[in-house]
Figure 1 (cartoon, rainbow, N blue to C red):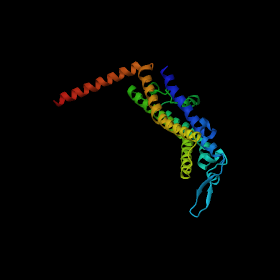
Figure 2 (cartoon, helix red, strand yellow):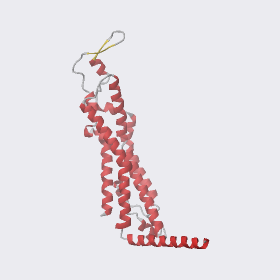
Figure 3 (cartoon, rainbow, N blue to C red):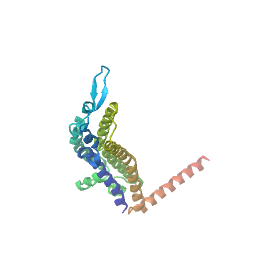
Figure 4 (tube, rainbow, N blue to C red):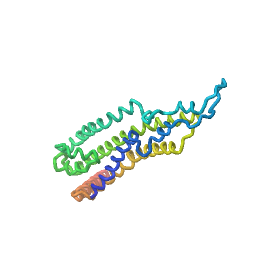
Length: 261
């Protein structure tokens, strides 16, 4: 049950990362209203400004400089195209390679089914018991130390991948900031729908960074620690070995103090 509790937040977070990655492309959550509103031409054409030479500038001509011809124009760049074309492929290959490097120290075989599982959440099955039973470490506490290091690597890998999936939102935030600045320079205020669109972009970006970098990794580490320490079938043996090691350490320290005295 503890293992399932560890999987749920990671799976939900991975789904959230994928949705965030696709949001600018599909216009989810009304995120492209800033662009759709920019496609609407000026309905009226009153006087907008008068130049230093007396030239009159109409509202329609001033807005035409900011008006977009289509929604993708707001998000069109080579970097955005490369992000959607290559980031998913690079993430898949790099995930497999890094997982293989981690698992070589823990397991003799790299199961494709287990590898698929690691795309969803950091795995709990390559645990300290594997190190101990399969001869990767002769000491139980050393096995526990290596297991924690392997799990930490998987959690960091997942967090990094989820943050990389935020690239389209970061790019859209940059473009939206430039857009709003250009409108402010010409004294155009954001309409309510445009302001809501900017708010959604800010919320997705801030929420993604906080969740991917801080909240969920800490929760995953805590749940995994509780599972291995209290929910694992061998947890009693591990705690007994830790207690024995602590007594040995205390006894050694006491003997050294006595000999010095």
